[in-house]
Length: 443
View (spheres, rainbow, N blue to C red):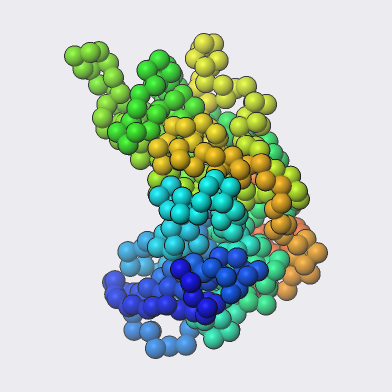
């Protein structure tokens, strides 16, 4: 869509949930911020304020969701951390460009851009740098130019770190949960640190649920032999089954995986087969239909310094032979599930990704990525920053996070083993309450 009013609000519609007044807001932003008068796209955000306080002048808090590729949380009332935030703030839940109700990016819309190279050119504008520049345009629109507090979860923390590097004048405080990135490491470094953590999570799962060792092997053997096609058209390979280990990074992920594995098979006239219920759950867990940007840009969020990502997770996995599922089955070893990683085979297995395989390949071979972080500026930071760093976080390396925490002047880290990566959701108001207390000097 075209709109010459950079950052202009396009619409605002209000409605109510218990204890909360919500307003849908839409903004026109440049696709390429270097060309403000060029093509524009739409970015959606949901404003939330405590009922009865709609007319008050409250400070703003911007929420930056994890991902990349996920829209902001769709809360019902004052769920999770939102109720705590609404005690002090008017909250803006941003659907980062290409996600949620913002101008969509998926296999249906990307062909409008042209061939694979043109689609990749378009997606190159969907990293943290563009998200922060969107946020700055929106801030000027909704706050009248006043700075705001940001809360960045996971990839949202990567965006927050870029914000501190490039536009700290827009911030009164930055709160980061499970999202302090490596400042100078590349995707290879990220996955070389990740696979040992993933193995620890898998072994901890088997220690909790020892019966799952054999169950996982039985399912893996069946998948290897039959390679079933799931109800949504997803081709379930052994590697795809192993990727269900991504759940193990969440607070209830081990329990979810156990309950999935415990009744995978049913008896049929043709013998034992994977149940429809099991296949339906696996199809939902593995499909990227609702968040294709995650698959397309997951390694690109680490790209800087003129080096291609070149399918880092796939290459680095070869350094850890314990994750070879076929060898585990042949040797009698426990099957190692994998975690948060993207591989070329996913663009063959998933019908939502198959049309985008060439686009993903183009992105994986690009080298012209701009730097995302400014270590010099971060070392001179004056914005109050507090970060929850989860001990042995499966998704974001604790060592990388602590090195970055030491680089950002004035950042106060809170290292905890009480939560997994989803602590800001699973912990209700406690995580946000502590971080707010830290930036205010109350804790």
